Image 1 (cartoon, rainbow, N blue to C red):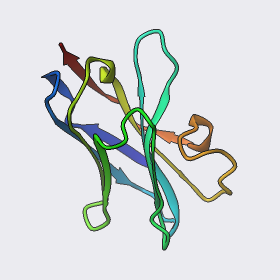
Image 2 (image 1 turned 60 degrees about the horizontal axis):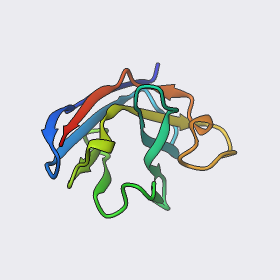
Image 3 (image 1 turned 45 degrees about the vertical axis):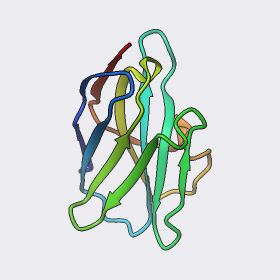
Length: 128
């Protein structure tokens, strides 16, 4: 059974940094997708950053976080991270880790429909 467990959320002032982590377990495929999404109150869940765990190691970022956020994967620790710098109040949201495996990628890497497993989320609050 696949499990995704996020940690690292918290409260920070604008301009600050946070690092989120997601412990991934139970995926036996050699090629799979991992991503971070976020959802603010009253808004749809949106993709933040995605990473393909395969020979290609493709990375994709939402335009709103390019240059500020960095996604990374530690294969040995099976941990997906999201380093978030220069945080803005607009970054405040619940952040979710997501994974997909074993099926063709039929959607964009930052599309919620591309993922079949989700973590419980970790809250990020950025104050101005």
